[in-house]
Length: 188
Image (cartoon, rainbow, N blue to C red; front, side, top):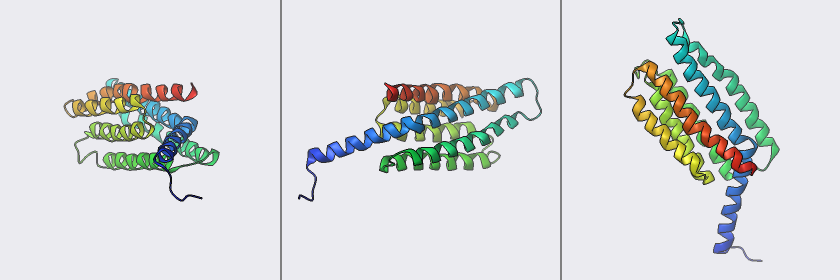
C-alpha cells in the first residue's frame, strides 16, 4: 500500500473537493447568496424610498435583516446536517462569517465614519464574493465582486441617500445575478 498520492491523484482529489463544495453550495450556499441579496437590495431601496417620502425613521426598514439572519442560521444548520462538509465548505462559511463581523462593526461605527457605511459594506461584500467565486471557480461571482468594488468607490463619492440607490443596484447586479447564475449552473 502506498502512502503518497501521485500528482494526478492529488489533482483529482482537489477537483473532487471543489465539485463537492459546489454541490454543497447548491444545496444551500446559493440560497444564502439569494436570501441576503434580496434582503439587502430591498432594504437599500426601501430606505431610500421611505426617506424620499419623508418617513421619520427610514432606517427601520433594516430590521428585516433580523429575520433574514435567523433564516440564514437555520439554512446553515440544515446544510451542515445534510451532507459532507469539507475544508472548502468550512473556508466558505468562515469567509462569510468574517464578512458579517466586518459589516456589523462598520454598522456599529456608522457615526464615526460619517454614515458612509454603504461603501464599506460593498467593499466587504465584494471581498466575500471574490473569495467565494475563487473557491468555486465560478467566474460570474468573481465578476460580481469587481462590480461591488467599483460601486464602493462610486459610493464614497455620493451623498448618503444616493448611496442607498447605488448599493441596491450594485447588490442586484453584483450579488443576485451571479447568485442566480450559480443556482442555474448547479441545477444544470
